[in-house]
Length: 347
Image (cartoon, rainbow, N blue to C red; front, top):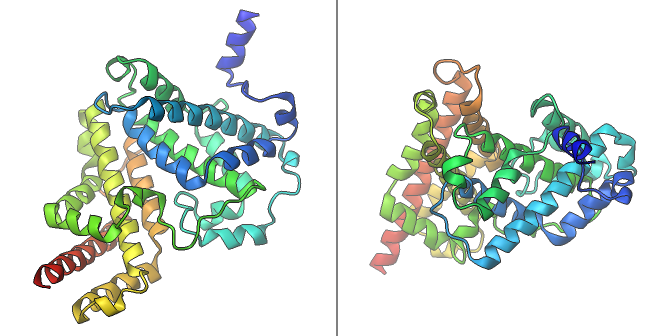
């Protein structure tokens, strides 16, 4: 019996599902989203990524328990998605493309492109197919469980190859695709902050003003610069370098969504002078051309290139253009928040 169990685990057998969940995997999706919103799960996943790369993050017992509950739920979600890709007919009367299209413009879809969102089942199949020769059980979930209970995991268990980030992207894509297929939709309000901006509460304006006042544009541009030098990091790779990459990625991700939030902010026109209005209009033009999700997906792909073997020297021309566009957004954001700070100081 033990040998059979080991063989099933090596084959990534979906062991966390009951018989009823095997027959109807969508019930797992519905149960998951009755407990978590997409934003909540992605916020905790972002924290998990840093947790498996360092021993310096201290969790309270309540946080540790919440992570453990999320890991258990995510393992079920992955297993249900795996069953669904093998038996696509079990998707039943899932959301029609017309219903899904209405969700695409919502800001919480940070990881799926429009094409991926329109065909969530196909997206799941692709995620599983590129993750390895076997069905996929993300190492990030295993490593997170170890990091929660094993104090020496940072020294002995970290991959040192940023494989966890590859899993992180796959998990988030599965999460969003599962949401689109589920029946239990708790949509965030249009005015709600993107999950990456939760650190900016209760006042994103105050957070942005403080960030650009303390670090200026320097820290933001330093975070952007590592995309052009990832090959150098691959030469001497270790867990600390992986954590640094993740921190840079998360900083840029937050600043881009903060800039888009500022560009769409309503009800403050009467508080702005002419210069602030002009800067905000310039920011809005950047996001009319490409939404924040466009730049976020570029950041994901750029960091994912670190773990791929087929790297080419230098950045692709299209990548250079995107980096330049992000640089413009960061400069405009810096100008806006510095001007905002100066205005408050003069009042």
